[in-house]
Image (tube, rainbow, N blue to C red; front, side, top):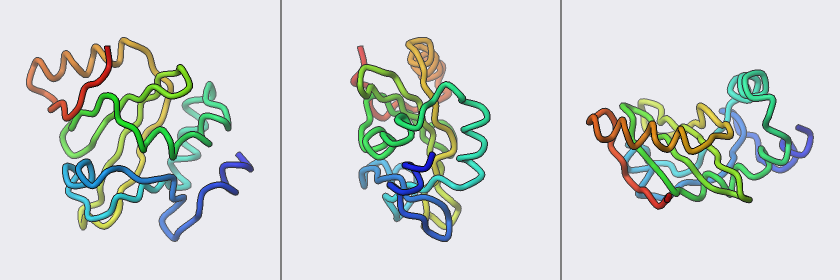
Length: 134
């Protein structure tokens, strides 16, 4: 993860891994578009998703900058992105003040996750904001 720590700027909240659009930030009731990955989330992610390589983490800025399937699930946003012929799933959450956005989950995924989000939408459990996936 040495390259990760060199690539992304560290703030008092964690590592600044990229930005989302103003539209998505507004949906999350955030005044910030900057996405932070905390040290705790990095540790959790490394432990729970050993299939992710350092190269996957180095793509985070590109991944969160895209949104092929985006859904609002309660107070968080989940998204699925195709990047370098791989499917990734990530989740974002705004803090209560709306002044910061945190990446809470990042993993590789498959078409089953896409179907789950779409099925939750059909049942009225999530709101799909954008769906540009086949």
